[in-house]
Image 1 (cartoon, rainbow, N blue to C red):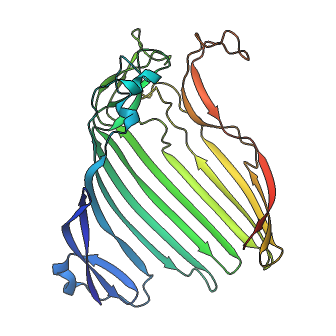
Image 2: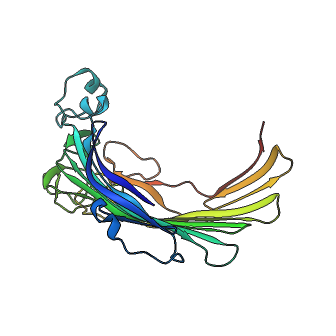
Image 3: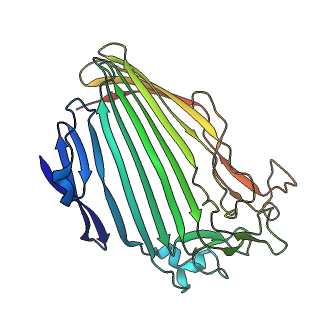
Length: 326
């Protein structure tokens, strides 16, 4: 069976065909080739593992317009205060993003009674006139600004394993989010800033708040027809602190979080469940920036001088409950 699919270009809600592709189905295998070459695809043996190509897609458009909050907080000389919402700040340009995505997915049976699904994809997004939230020369105040180009690209992969009583899954993402222009940034609270309280951001410096590597996993097992136990977790690398767009100070630490859950179906409409989050009571941080310690007294740490400020994650917590279905 032959069918022609297309990669498309999106611009302000309209689509234009870029390049045609043909998905040639031989047995249960999909092979994607240019339409003109459709009849020249050699036959594949029916026993080949089923694999599906996710059609390549290129997207271009005005990624987003500046929000009212960004437009009212876009002046480095008057960074975010209540008065910003009543004055006219400099205009911000619209963000324009070009995105390319491609991937594969498939499934197979590793042995009788089991199935395995997999997926693999790559993407690249080039953003022009990207808007970021930057520190100002006034300590503790920030503002929005167009900083030129940024690049977000990466790989996503996943596996899902299924048996009559067992389900397990694994998902990995690699994200390289970087600045693509050189610019000077005010960051007076950054201990690595120069004598003028500034840092120099260069192409290739990593965007703050975006971990390079993240792994998610989970499993559930039906002990009986009514009782299910499961676990899930996240393993993540550290992230650059906001206010350190030049990547001059250490990132937040890497971490692994493990959660447990169970449920018991008392009746058709009533379920008893329990959850334990951060079961190993891991100590890690979800956010990092720099805070003013000179003008804001900290009772717990009198005389503190380290401006590095981290947001700790929640400790171990558990709860049980009843779920009713009407």
